[in-house]
Length: 136
Image 1: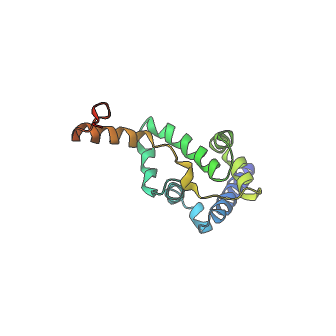
Image 2: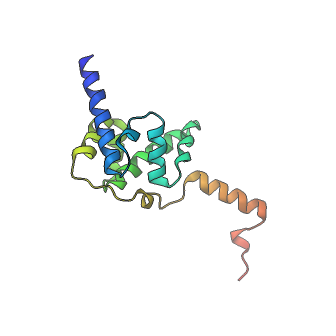
Image 3: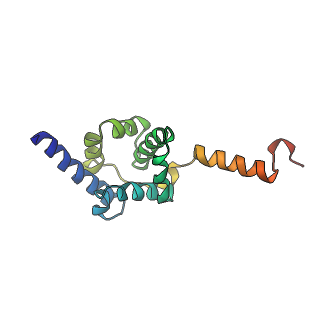
């Protein structure tokens, strides 16, 4: 029980420090749900993308993508992002107290999201725009 309490406190301190490195208020990192909103806002430019976590099956993909993008925002690789997902209490401490500097997270989403692709294709289909019939 003492070990879980220590891990919980260290995780809260790590999240506080990570959000300070990101240029946000430290308390934003420890408030449930709001911290995910702020993280999505930093990484994707739209905080409301955190609602994608409510979509069954897709939420698995999105949480993996979000952790990898979070790692990339700190100049780490995809393996570090998987570490953030599976062992957050260790990898968040590394981000918080390591030498990694936060870079603007907007570059991490260089490829469109799967949902955005589907929505764009649906819009094109409804409006009649088709790539294979483009006039030149």
